[in-house]
Structures are given as C-alpha cells and as structure tokens.
Amino acid sequence: MGGEEAVAVHNVHGNILSGLADIEKSDVVFISEASGNTSVFPLGTEIKYLGKNKKILTRGHKFRFFLSRRRLEADVGSFLSGYDLVITDGLLTTALIAKQVDKYGLKSLTIVHGEQTKIRPLVSSRIPYLVGGSFYYSCVSGSVKQSLLNNVELPEKRVRAIVSGLDDKLLEMRRFDRAESRVFFGLSSEDFVIGCVARVERHKGIIDLLKAFSKFISKGYKAKLLLIGDGSILKEVDLLSRELGVDASVLLPGYLNYADRYLLAMDVFVLLSKTEGLGLSVLEAQFSGLPVMLSDIPAFREIQKLSVSDSCSVIEGEQDLIARWIALHENPAEECNYDLSWCSVDLMKNSYKSLVSSIMQ
Image 1 (cartoon, one colour):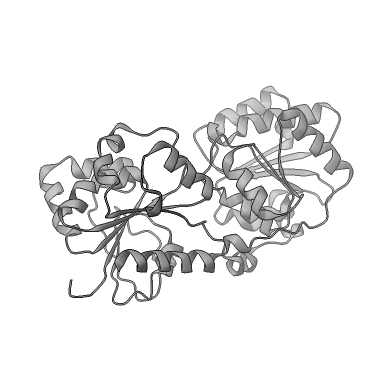
Image 2 (image 1 turned 180 degrees about the vertical axis):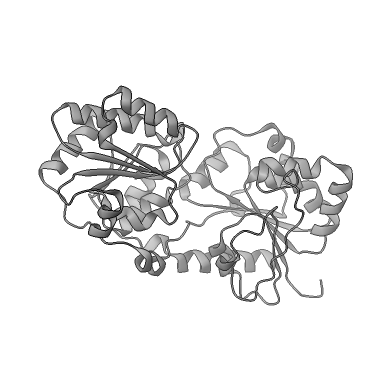
C-alpha cells in the first residue's frame, strides 16, 4: 500500500484505537451492522460500516453467517485486501478470517478477552493458520495470556498481555458521591450495602452471592444487596430472592449506563465469577476506594497481587465471605488505597501503539 498503514477493526475498544491514532495515515474500519457510538474513536478516524443485515456480523458468532455465503466471502476477501493489518476481537473471529488474512498476505492482531478453557472446533481447525508468523495476540491480562498458551500451541513471542486500562479522569468526572448515589437507589446513609456490577449470568456467581447474602441476613445483620446489571437469569435471581425471603433487601435496578458512577453507594464490592478475563468493574471499584472481595480465580489473584493492598481479598468460600462481611459491618472501612498504575489507560494506549508499530515493521 505504498507505505500507508491501514487497520481494519472488528468490535475493538475505542481506547485501543486511540492508541493507534497517530500511526501515519491509518484508516480504522469498524466492522459492524450498526452505527454504534463513534465518539469513543480518535478525532479524524475514518469509520466505515460493512453491511446492515443482522446476519452479516456484529460479533464473532454472527460473523459465521458472513463467511458462509460464497459471494460475501469473496466480498470480505477483497475488502480485507485493502489493508495491512486486521485487528479482531476474539479467537473465533480470527479463525473465521484466517484464510483471507493468509491469502492476501496480511497481518493479524487478535484481542483475547477471556480464558481459553474450551477451544471451539472451528478455532482448532484453523490452528495451522493461527500459529503462522503473520498472526499476533494481545491478551487483556497475564492470566488470559497463560490460559491461551496452555490451551493453544501458539509461539509465545507473538503473544502479549496488555491490560485493559482505566480512564481515571473520565471516571472521576462522572462519579456520583456517596450521598447522590444512595439517593438514586433510595438507600439511607445508615444502610450497609454489599454491591456488585456485572452481567447477571451464572458464570458471574450471582446466585452464589445471593445465597451468601441470605445467610448473612439470617444471622441478624441488616444490610442491602445492590446488583447492578442485566442478563439472562435476572428473573431467576428476583424469584430466588423472594424464595429466600430477602427480596425487600435486594435491589435489582438492571442495566445502568456508566454503572461505575454509582459505586460509592456501596460499602463493599463483591464479584464471585467462575471465570474472567480481567474484571474491569473490580478495577473501577478499587478506583472508587471500596474494599473488594473476589472469588479465587486466576484473573482475580492477578488483580490482588498487582493492587498491593489488604483491601483486595480473594475469599476462601462462603463462610470466609460472610465472616468478612460481619467484620466490615462492625468496623466500616475507611477509603481504601490501591496501586492502579499498572492498569492506566495511557499505559494501555502506549502499549498498543508500540505493539502495532513493531508488527508493521
């Protein structure tokens, strides 16, 4: 392309693109069925949308429809041939376009968000492409990187860990104080509030959290459980709270835009996920100065180690969790301090800029 560098992007965070904004003459193409929120992209970025049919593509699992039709497969091949580097969101998406990337002599950078505990057949079938010298991988945490290397035989030199960054200025700007946050949810200043921000899905441990909360209440402690988020088991959680007799103490506001602004309504943040890539809501809770209590999984052990604070706890089961709630209920925590320099948005942007520059050399 005569020295011009162009980047095709599929569903990649705006912060990543911002890190690439000053690569000379780069064209960033965001492949999606809908227009989305273009304000997160760097000024001057050209954003194109490929297709309007819902069967074409939004995320990896829908991308399959795009490549299953011969005419569209030819279209995506000719489309990608105009670029030097393709950035994709997840291994499945990369597997789906691997043949085209190889055919046109492109380079590929895959953003890997989660632990690779189960490799899909399609990904396995494309391993000969994925281990090739043109394919690079960026994982959102060190634990995701290790999981990827353990489950997919990729060359380690082409796998990096770049942590998803916190934009502290943006978080500070939109954050509500404790009083504002509590008024929003109808909470009093005296309420002891256990909180969580997560998709309401089984792998997020929401059911376990609710059951532990019920046992905490049964010991005579007064508290509220604030679960911010929506998901496929929200109605089940609501029903279970009624069956356990704690529905009057459980708040289920559903999905809220910029949920991080309400974190100061909580006295403690709890997330009991079965698996995570990193857990951005945990970092946001730490930025808000909350004590955090987490399940014992690799991503959370990594956060605990890097945060350098006793206020970040990896719990050892339900009894340990309840005991920690009791201790906190009786002796409320002051604002907690964490080392969050390792997950700054500037570090993330600079890391992506450096990585992409090295790939394009």
